[in-house]
Length: 530
Ligand SMILES: NC(=O)C1=CN([C@@H]2O[C@H](COP(=O)(O)OP(=O)(O)OC[C@H]3O[C@@H](n4cnc5c(N)ncnc54)[C@H](OP(=O)(O)O)[C@@H]3O)[C@@H](O)[C@H]2O)[C@@H](O)CC1
Ligand SMILES: Nc1ncnc2c1ncn2[C@@H]1O[C@H](COP(=O)(O)OP(=O)(O)O)[C@@H](O)[C@H]1O
Ligand SMILES: [K+]
Image 1 (cartoon, rainbow, N blue to C red):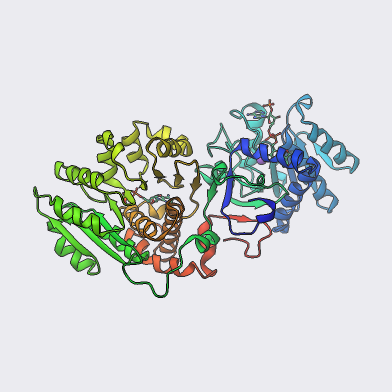
Image 2: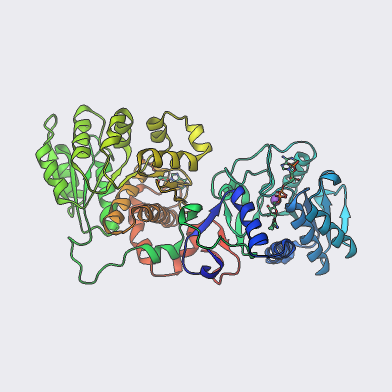
């Protein structure tokens, strides 16, 4: 967001370490904001966060590195000292490596008689402020830095990280050797990618994004940064339902789903779709599922085919009837399903969601890439992505943004790479990371629910990429509501569907917002967490 549009309801921006530094420089060089002012605001934001639990500030240690993260730390120490707190500042690293800003901050701190210590007694402190490394961490942590981080983690003190917990890669969220396990992180201007992905988000603790006067460049295009959907985006982007609408105008969705053994997957995606606002749903499925689905979901229309007798004419008519198609949940990968899916791809120009077995079949038939319709959403989990790309799970997980982006661009599709933190990438370069959801969603059928929500939103939304990102966010929110009701161990995919009404109702109601942004909030907003 630019300075003028700060609260205009645009999505939360998430930056890489390179972008964070570029935007610092932009503020300093183009916007003429002096670096020391940014640093003072950064330090004040940390002090603000510290004082939210003033009872922990009996004895504070600020541990600083050699760069500007350390310089922020020294400024925090000075402000606390001048407010009358008992604070020690410890600078690690050789003096000749100090950044100019750190030297300047130390000079000021000395004039104000801030207590500088060399070998702190780690266990004496009630709060430790971690200002060793920020976005400038460039390699594994070793030597006395490693020792200091271990010492910090071993204490019972409250740990507050400045910008990023030291030792955490601010791009990937990986631990580079060892990292401070923070209770809270005050990050400056924008969320960092590494604070959104696992394990980084866990190590950062509760994360506050503090406005320190650094904003996006003016007229920046949406693909320049990754974004995270939040509630205000749901309110902006979820199409309003026309009061005079009818079931035809709210989207007719066709599912090619459910083999003989997997009626449940067809039920879950179709049911989630109806609960997400679709006007009509039809399931094209194996004959054996007819009775089950008619009992479980009488609202759905059915087209069924007998074993070995795929009815291509019927599928053609279904494809003509619908507005959106979703294929794959519980479909199976036999020759019959393969030919049905191939027929679908050859005869469908409508927006299409491919999930589960459709992705596995796509992986086995790479020539289908040429048959994809203009709007196509792929929703692979890591294993399905691995099958389609030949990459290892580790490779995909290490660079989810890159993996999703590469796939989206190669196939000109929207790629929803599902994981504990799902990443969404679009061929035009836009990307999102999802912050809602919980481990209770790692339960059979949860992905089928997402397919249903995505198809419902594609049927009514203008921008399919926004709808895919919104669907992932709302799916996670429903997971959070389900978790609140049933607990992360006991919740099932059906509970996620059961929570959708509350989530969609909440689209216009602020009350339930606290649960679904995983301890990330923006400093200074009235409703502290959302
Ligand atoms: N005006 C501004 O610019 C603003 C900046 N802000 C703040 O600046 C922070 C970024 O500052 P930064 O770029 O100086 O990087 P930082 O995180 O301090 O680390 C670099 C230092 O660490 C060293 N180093 C790296 N890895 C290492 C390792 N493994 N082991 C040992 N050493 C290692 C590296 O040394 P070198 O690699 O050169 O040997 C260098 O000395 C940012 O997170 C935010 O807090 C805010 O105040 C907003 C305004
Ligand atoms: N730990 C987690 N935190 C948040 N979301 C999760 C977590 N684990 C799984 N999910 C979400 O649950 C869904 C699981 O989908 P998937 O693996 O396709 O399940 P299935 O194939 O059983 O339907 C995905 O949307 C994923 O993002
Ligand atoms: K830090």
